[in-house]
Structures are given as C-alpha cells and as structure tokens.
Amino acid sequence: MKYFTKFLIILIFLSSNVNSYSAENIEYLKTDWSFKGLFGKFDRGALQRGYQVYTEVCASCHSMKYLSYRNLAEKGGPEFSEAQAKVIAASFEVTDGPNADGEMFKRPGKLSDKFVMPYENVEAATAANGGAYPPDMSVLIKARSGGADYIYSLLQGYDEPPAGITLDEGVYYNKYMYGNKIKMASPLSEGIVEYSDGTETSIEQMSKDVTTFLMWTAEPHLESRHQMGFKAIVYLIILTILVYFSMKKIWSRIETEV
Image (cartoon, rainbow, N blue to C red; front, top):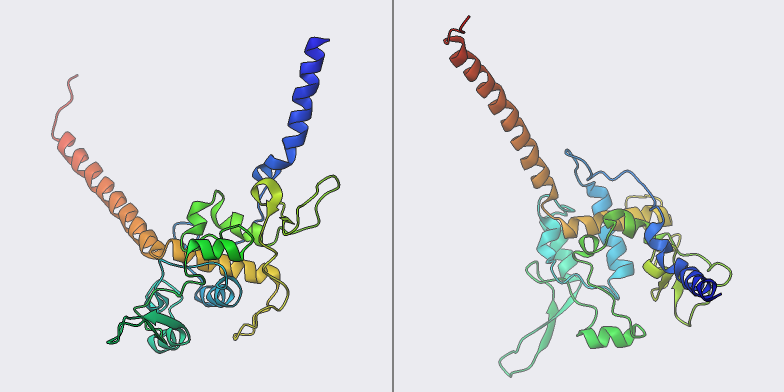
C-alpha cells in the first residue's frame, strides 16, 4: 500500500507537469530559410520587410541596443541606400546633450546613433508590461534554443488553451512557448502592416520576414562567414590534391624491395 501511494504521488506530479514540457518537445514549424546552408544568403526584400515589421509592431516594446541606423545601409544587411538610411534615422527623436545651458535636448536621429530605446530603463519597461521585461531583440535568435525556427513558430503559436488549463489575466497560451504561457499578446494580425512592395501581409509572411531580420541582427556577418568557409574548403581540396601528387612523385623514386 505504501509503494502504491508513492506511485500515485509520482503519477500526479508528472501529469501536472506534462504541459510545462510540451513546448520543449513539440516540433517547430518549418520553412525555407534563404540564409541556411553553405551558400546561404539573406533575402534583401525579406530583410527590408522584416525591419518594417519590427519598427511598426515590435519596436514599441522591444529594443535593439546593439544596432545603429548606419547598419541598415551596410553590405550584407537590408542594404537600404545611404539616403534611405538617413531618412529612417531622422524619423526618430534622439535625446542628446547637455547643451551650453547644461540641459538635455531632442534632435533628429543620425546614421551614427543607436536604435532608439522604447523605454528609458529596465524598470520602466517592466512596469509598462505588467511585470514582464520585453527582451532586447538584437541577438534574441541566438539566445533561444531553436533559433529562427523557434521565433518563427512562436509568432504563429497563439491559440485557445486546451481544456483543463487556466490562464491568469494578461497571460496567453502559446504552444511553442516554454511552459505554454506568455505575457505578450499575439503581436501579428492579418494586414497589420502594409508592405510597399505589394507582398501579402499574412501572419506567416510577416513572421518569416521579421525572423529573417532578427537573424541578420544576431549574425550580421553571416554571408561573409559563409563565403570564407567556402574559400577555406576549396583551398583545402586544392592543397590535398597537391600533397597527394607530391607524395606520389616522391614515393615513385623509391624502389620497392622484392
């Protein structure tokens, strides 16, 4: 009887925690990422659309503290023209100073400025979001297990909670979130942004675009790294061939003993 009681306690414990691990075991949504593989490159259109989704949807809560506006015009990224990047930077107000009177002042952003933060400090961000701190998105993909697939899936994983699961006020169910509970409401909805290139603004498309942008912010030198890796492989192949023929020529001069 004692062992049966222990077994029941363990069974109840495991059943109560099954939902906590479900997001870790579930298979993420899959899509074709242009940046995957040895010859992977970023889709410039997706990067520019992803920046638009970040600016119009995500930037009100999530910061990008490691990114400067000049990065938007650099090779390997969204590759906006310098003029476009200047217009983007100037559309934001940056706190600068102090001036000659010892006071801080506002001015239009410049290419050298970091992305404007949505909140003045961590405490302000936490207070404005019900006690949950919106993480900085600069290297978010690298900080999450599953990387791009996880972020892509999370943005599309909002659903009604299954029977038996109750959620506190301000908490939402997401089947790809660790523990299945998230304090961020679904950020994307059909047509929430309007792409200038005419691309359809479905949740799936916006999820893919903003995830591509976040991949670039986390790995801005991905393309050059892929190119370097390819050159290294070609170099090693050529070196191996040369060594092989050199050794063959050297050993051809040595007579084998009968």
